[in-house]
Amino acid sequence: MRATCCGRHLSGAERISRVEDIPALTAALTERAMSHSARIPDEVHCTVERLDASEILHAELPDITTWDVPAWQAGRELAGRLLKNAGVAAHVVSRSLACLAEGPAPDGGVMRGAMVVDRLSGERLEPDNRRGVRVSRMDVAPDERVALRNLLDKVGLGHHRVLEALVLAGKVLKAPGIVAELCWSDAPDYVTGYVASPIEGYQRITRLKETGDPMGGRIFFIDRRNWDRDEFIAFLEQRGVLFHGKPGINPTRTWRV
Ligand code: PML
Image 1 (cartoon, rainbow, N blue to C red):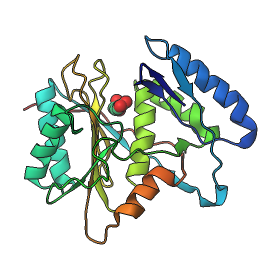
Image 2 (tube, helix red, strand yellow; image 1 turned 135 degrees about the horizontal axis):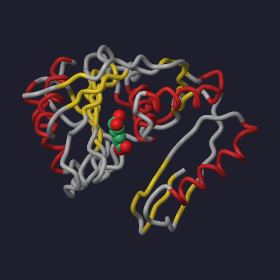
Image 3 (spheres, protein in one colour; image 1 turned 60 degrees about the vertical axis):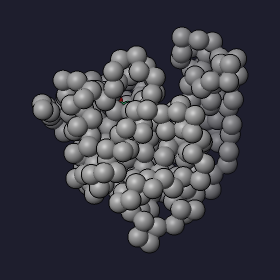
Image 4 (cartoon, rainbow, N blue to C red; image 1 turned 90 degrees about the horizontal axis):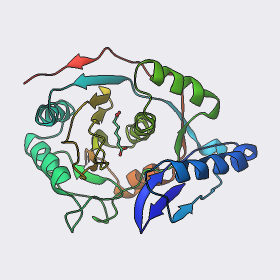
């Protein structure tokens, strides 16, 4: 589901479901589109696509760690450290953080999809710098969604953005050649972001930008050895991935500079 107002993105969601659940699900997502944002959308698109069940990848969600930071500056410093630990070169880290903060699209605005960046050279590798790479076709197994939401609620992570970002990051971490993802939202009132990596999992950072800042987005850092761009993008955009089980929740950590 994708809802827009005056051509601008308002809300979106996607699910992988059984055929018999599709009518109820499209109704629920349309309801969500109408009530989810302060503005009433002027377009709501619900697209239903058939997936071959035998080609769906079944996987586990990454573990979650939350880092409490006193200010966005400290948050970005921590994000830089986590990215370097994951193998991103120092000069690429600083350039990438600046790029996301300043607006990575050619007109200096936000991108709908993600940037793809070579971890050593910093070269941008997404075919279209305006659109970026859109991750799609991933979900929590339908029978496990309620249990996961209850778990996240119980540990104070019940905001819908956490579950959605966790599932997206979970898929990104399965992509061939990925070494890390950096994300913070372009929603002006949502300042928490994350660094995800195959070894450290999903590392939330409580502040990565100032409240009111409309900039944000995603960067996928890749290792170019034996990497194939078409394969990478096809995996992220086309391959169905369903997540099972509960992620580990690590104790909150504190970061002070
Ligand atoms: C979190 O709170 O775990 C981070 C969520 C990032 C949300 C990104 C987005 O919604 O655009």
